[in-house]
Image (cartoon, rainbow, N blue to C red; front, side, top):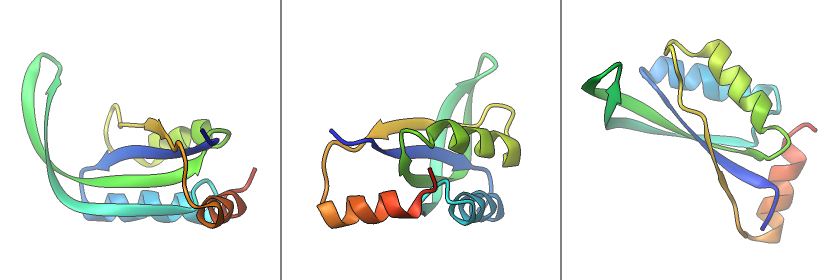
Length: 106
C-alpha cells in the first residue's frame, strides 16, 4: 500500500468542477484532477430520492493532503454537503507515484 489517494467528488456544473480542479492543482493539493462529464447520480437527500446530472472529479493526492483537499472542496463547493471520499492507491508505477508525490506540496 502507498500513501497516495484518489479522492472522489462531484460538482453540479462544469464550471464548478473546473474551478475546484484548478484550485486543487494550483495550490499543490493535488497532482492531477480528471473531470468526467455529465454523469447521472441517484441518491437520497433529506428523506427523498433525487436524481442529478453531475461532473465527477477524480483527484490524485496524498493521505497527508486529504484533509486540506476536503477543506478546499467544502469552501469552493455550492453543495451543502459535497462528496469527499478517499480511496487508497494500493500500488502503481514507481515513476507515476513519484511524480504524484513531487506534484503535491507537503
